[in-house]
Amino acid sequence: MKRDLRASIDIGSNSVLLLIADVTSGKFQELSKQSHITSLGRELDKNKLFHQDSMQATYEALEAYGLECDKFNIPREEVIATGTEASRVSRNAADFFSKIKLELNINIQVITSQAEAYFSTKGILFNSKFDSEIITIMDIGGASTELIKVNTKNFKILETISMPLGAVRATQWLEDDLFVQNLKKIFLEFRNEIDTFQSKTLYCVAGTVTSLGNMHLGNKEFVEDDVHGLVMKSEDIDSLFKKYSDYNPEMFLEAFPFLEKRSKSIRGGLHTVYHIVHRLLAKDITISTYGLRYGTILEGKIKQEFLHV
Image (cartoon, rainbow, N blue to C red):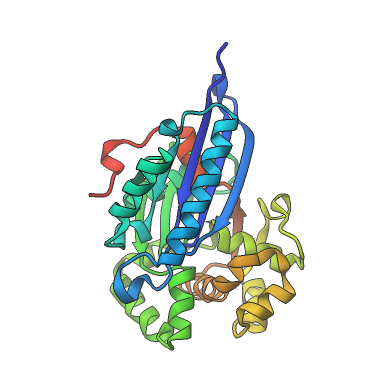
């Protein structure tokens, strides 16, 4: 039997993630998983353009991922590569991705916020256990946060919103002393929708929350198995916020070396988690390490309706 090997790449506003897996006969075996922080959403709100340094870092990450796919004999043109909020906003995204296609033979498809919600949900539902039939998922990226209400029994997404608030954006706002006013503006804009996502428990995915989980545990190294399924109380989030909300990147890196480049955006991520958790009246959050790249690799393709135009 021919093995069904697949590769997915999630190009986010903060990180670029690779997953290679064997999905032969419906099974799922991880073969390779890599992550690079490239901050593609850096200063995006100022000029709606990808920063040159971030594009170079992203190019180098994708170059390395292409070579990794070559090792498993996965044709680069078959790699499922997706761009999210930063790619939807940036005016030079198309030119940059055309360069990637031409030089690296990796075709990047920019997906809608609804597609983000769908694939993140598919990933979380694949390897998590739930106490309730209806759950609320929070996916905090670098430039946006998706809130998703889903029926876990029939995998029906009941409602979703995408707010322009994420770790990289929030960090920039904190540096520019604009966080409070921008947060108030977002919560006001989504005031009618956001209340429908209030829930005692939030199921959370993506790098910010997995990093906060490791920080909560006091880990100096990132231990994925420690945080998948970890339940943090709202009081634990409060404690992290009280202790680290004013830390700078150097202080974060000294306290938690595993953060590496994420030390530059984790402050904004912490502020984002803290305020959304309280806005949704959540009492605890359950962390999942399965997100968008798992959803896309399980799906195997990106439907036309999911493409951002």
